[in-house]
Length: 190
Image 1: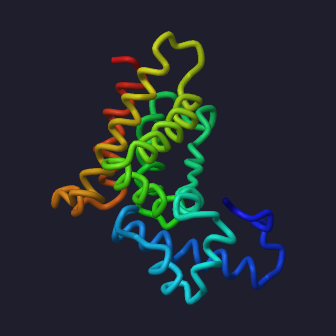
Image 2 (image 1 turned 90 degrees about the horizontal axis):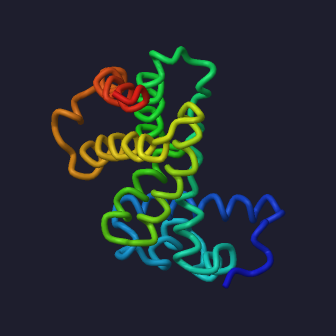
Image 3 (image 1 turned 45 degrees about the vertical axis):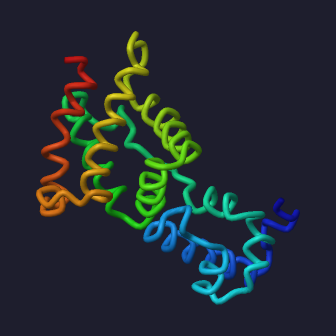
């Protein structure tokens, strides 16, 4: 269980916590949740393993902190309806390619293939953040949000987990141009 001192008010405490999170994210991405150890993370962060327990309570707590995700989807009212699919695709591709929250997304995607809790976190993140992106009042909004999520996750799985060469060769804008029309057809209900 995490101690009550998780806010790390001192500059040294904040620096230690950030160092732990960076080391954990790197290890979780390269080795997965199961093979990553608290000791290895502590070594990478150049801190005592007890500090991980102090700040995060456990390896599970650290994983949760390292994979907290805010998708920050574009506002629908800021984009013409006919361009929503491309805007969403462009945003998704840039998120997955970036450090924040891309690293957490890639870690969570890899973990979700083997861990039910990680899969539940992926579902929760996308359900809570993609569904509100859609126009209100649609009878099948949950289905559309699921289809959009599956297409984005499929792209990400192909590119970042199994490393399909054609997807690796696509620059971000080309990937968004290819993914956008399929997302738009779901948004339009075609």
